[in-house]
Length: 279
Image (cartoon, rainbow, N blue to C red; front, side, top):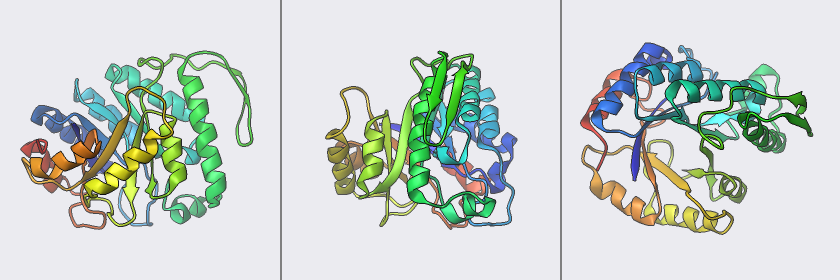
């Protein structure tokens, strides 16, 4: 199992220098990855927000080993060509350390509806799937032409291609027990299951993880595949993560409680980072 730190892109972590500090501390303490949120508004809270790709650029410049990415990017909220450029640029800067995580995005009302965009989940899912396919083609460095339901491309080649070949790993998030997001994830390189009865920062049960793994295994092809779960762990919390690893989880993502006082505060997050991974 590998271990990552998860931080929002608002509050204290809207500052790229703060994110760079967390990233450097995480690398020194033996963590394997740093993931940041990709929100523009969330619940209309009046706090500063930072662009996740600028934050991750600062993290890349402050580190040399840990993996970096968003957890997760709502592809339906972005233009695929611009997103492809941002990911490829970060992949080059970091020496091929990017992991790209995607999802439907939410909360849909504030983050889409507030800007006059659709809040239709079916349309957003269509844009997610079509956008992911375009990203993969853009990252190849080969010419792309596309005439889809939501996007059109006329003979475009985006260079440079990503450092990682054939592309950076793609993880897909979704709520279990909803089946469609899990089948979407099975097409790519990893799944980030969220649980309706175990909110952000709360640890899912090993049985829930086992159910997700069994379902995704029915639809995915052979090859490496990551299962990313998380929550709050104590330092040295082997007893907490070991059953999840036995159930099939391959990454532990250290998170703060959604709505908790420490969610977007540097001091408590940095304290936990410096204690090292829970194994």
